[in-house]
Length: 227
Figure 1 (spheres, rainbow, N blue to C red):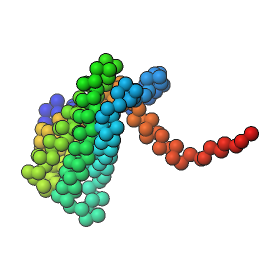
Figure 2 (figure 1 turned 60 degrees about the vertical axis):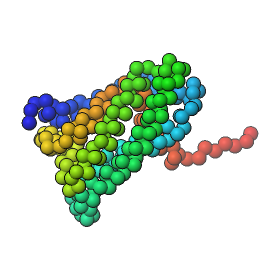
Figure 3 (figure 1 turned 45 degrees about the horizontal axis):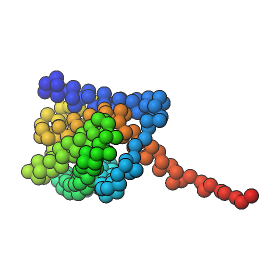
Figure 4 (figure 1 turned 90 degrees about the vertical axis):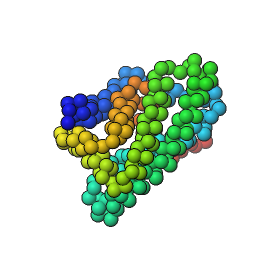
C-alpha cells in the first residue's frame, strides 16, 4: 500500500470532516447573511418542482442509506440473520432506485440552471461546481452497481463497511480495507469525501437549517388571543 493511498483513505477523510464541521460553524458565525439556499424560483419556475422533489427525496434516501448501511456493525446484521449477499442485493436495489431519482432530479436542475439565461447570469461558479460535483459523484455511485453485480457475495461491501467504521472510530489501519476494492468505489468515496470539503463554501450550508427545522415539529402551539 503506497503513501498516496494511505493519505487519501486514511487521513484525508478527517481533513474533510474537520473542514465540514469547523467551516460550517465559522460561516454561520461570520456570514449569516450568506446562509441561505438562494432560491431561483422567482427567476424561473420551470422544472423546479419536479427536479427538487426527485433530487431531494433521492439524495436524502441515498445519504441515510449510506450512513446506516456503512456504519451499522456487522454483528448487528448477523444477529438479525441478514446475510452479506442479501444486504448487498438490497443496497444495490435501493441505491439504484433512489440514486436514479436523484440523478434525474439533478439533471433537471442542472439543465434549467444552465439553459435559462436569467438563471445562468445569476449563478456563481460555486453553484455550478456543486451541481457538477454531485452529478459526477452520483454517476460513480450508480456505476458501482454494475461492478457489484459481478460478485454478490458481499465481500467488497464488507470491506467498505469496515473502512467506514474504522474511520469513525479513529483506527489507523482503515485505508488497508480499500486496497482490494474496485477503482470505481474508491473514486466514488473520494468524490463523496471532497463534497464535505467544499460544503461550507457553497449554498449547501442550508442543509443544516433543514435538519434544525425538524425541531419545529415538536414546538408548542402559539396562542393568539383577540384584544
